[in-house]
Image 1 (spheres, one colour):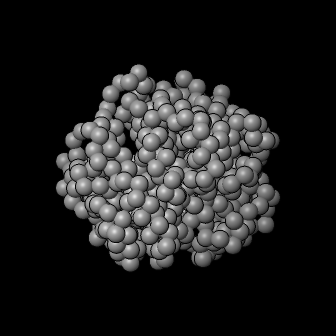
Image 2 (cartoon, helix red, strand yellow):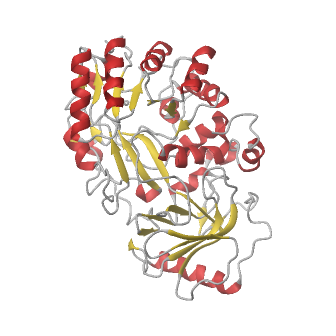
Image 3 (cartoon, rainbow, N blue to C red):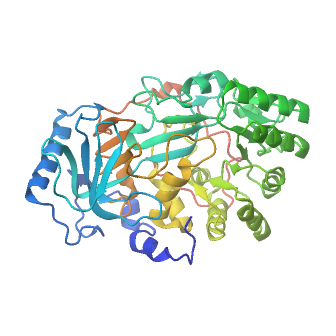
Amino acid sequence: MWTAGHPEQAQRDRYGGARSAQSRAQFPSCEDGRVTDQNQQLPSRRGVRLPAVLAERARTGLELIRSRRLRDGAVPSRGVAFVGTVWAGGATEPSFGLVVVDGAGRVADLRAERGGLPSDLLVLGGVNHWVVPALVDAHVHLSQPADGKSAALTGDWPTGLETGLVGLRDLASPLRQALSWRTGHRPPTPGWPVIAVSGPVLTAPGGYQASCWAGGGAEFVTSPVQARWAVQRLAADGVDLIQLGLDPGPSASPTPPPAVVRAVVSAAHAAGLPVLAHALSAELVGRALDAGVDELAHIPTERLPAALIERIAGSGMKITSTLQLFFSSGYGRDAAANAADLVSAGVPLLYGTDSGRSGAAPAVDPRELDRLANAGLGRLGALRAATELSAGAAGMRRRTGRLRVGEPAALVLLPTSPLVEPGVWQTPSAVFADGRLTVSPNAPDHRAVRPAATAPAGPPPDLPAAGPRGAATDQGSR
């Protein structure tokens, strides 16, 4: 995690920073990989020219995409080469080159030189394109707890793969639904990302989340004995992590007492499972730390004192962002201030959107990436949070958030730089994951739209009660 004053601050300054007012008002339009606003220069394009033969092959590959003659499905038997500015993830520096994926779906080569490719190898990309690891969302809800009906992964609901999401962590779903979506050690279903699940959230009877997660999304624990039994049963059923609901909500509802929280964490760790806690106040963050909770599901909305920030940093706890959700609900200012303090202290922040709760399907949210960037990570640091760090979120498997030779490829071909404008994630040129190439995935005939009639009314119920509190709001939409 990059923090203010880190030696790699210069790299963040070079590629990142807040968007200008003009770019916030409207994403720059892109067509066939060319940015129409030519005043925005891409940092990697200086002096870069493709050899004529390779440029023609890349143009031909993109024409196949646009004409729909190249269809979704398994990678061509000889593989595919992605050309553009390559960011391999982690602390690597973006630079122009190629990522070659073999017919088995593994990264065969990362190279700067652009010659010597087999004549029948499909080539996609170009000088304006970027090749980056695909993203993981560490906080989504794939069920509707209000009526217990499935809210995702049906024929009329996108899974997020079409925008470059290759991993999702589903929280607080009824156990039967959650296990039906869970990837586990199997390859994911074609067209789906890898999905890790927590099953129902454990909380106190009558607690705040009890009303949020009706229909099997919550399980109530009243004593340490019952808490241990609930965790052992969920572990035996095969969940990837345990979620613990600690937030009292706006009505000061009951929360699990410290003895129950300790019992949950102890039983989970004994079963080899990490624990994620929903705790938005300083008091309950402290309770989670006392019990040894591994992660927080949100950045807290109550300002955290410096001593507590230091405790979090020393504990190794990770925290999922969901900042845009709080800004849209009027609680973003304090959450953003906490995020900046956490970044400065070196606390790892993970990318998460809390999507799925209000009828919005999982998708890469450029606003969340910018919230992370503005917290002190810069845009490249925000991408690192959404790739390598989120791939290491509690319960996630099969993803690394990196492009490494010999490992399975999970990457996105973007038509221009995501560091100049994160909105480019809404229109990726291609997504490759689990041996399948999805081309022009966000074209109208590739995007499924959920019927509006099934969307619940009102704000997402797992937030504090909406109120101005002097906080800024952001009503922009995807």
